[in-house]
Image 1 (cartoon, rainbow, N blue to C red):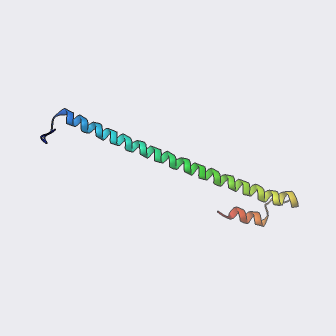
Image 2: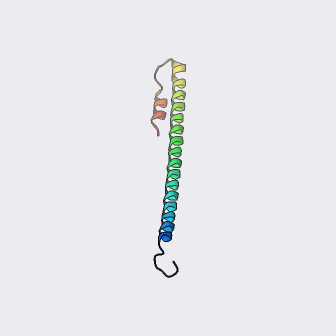
Length: 83
């Protein structure tokens, strides 16, 4: 290796090991980033669904329990339409 020429199977094996380690590290980092993004998206969707269910229950309790209506009030419908 010192003279700049190919030194046979050792240089090939070393290059293959480095390429394999690099590919493995890249795949591991990609999988970790994908899992992190998936967990973040799942938590966001769960929080959004929880907030939607809470707003719906609050609107229904504000209208159904008081006037006996089966539908939420206009204020409750407006609150549910907000993002």
